[in-house]
Image 1 (cartoon, rainbow, N blue to C red):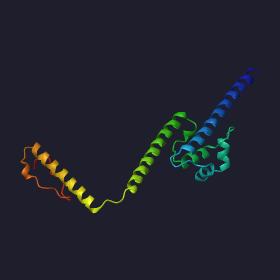
Image 2 (tube, rainbow, N blue to C red):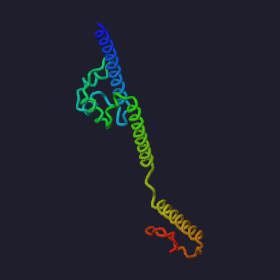
Image 3 (spheres, rainbow, N blue to C red):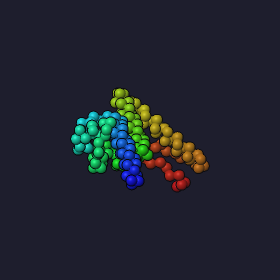
Length: 173
């Protein structure tokens, strides 16, 4: 009789663990669909990317969850660029991957912002390019003079640098 009681207790505990796992998968699946750097993804789009049915994903996200196969979890994770399939079950992996995806999202945002700034300004005029070239040449000449002064060389030995010249060596030769 004691064996039945132990079995029922283990079974109840197992059912609780299964429910917790299904809830975690559902929550994390919804999260990644909505917050992925390339998303948000609809169920249909993610199903297409992963090669699984929309119904399977919808069932996985439902309050009852579904018994997803490991194959399905791997397909979904890999279709989103997530190599660590424990993403759907392990809180630490979930947090680490989301932090990495936040970095990717921020880098993409900055790149898009920089691109928008570059395309919003008209092309520079030839006069502006010439002025910039002169400024850079002046900076290079001043740096060469400062280096020679620090090494005790007279500043009149410094020749103006052209665009194709390399920096003078710093070993005194």
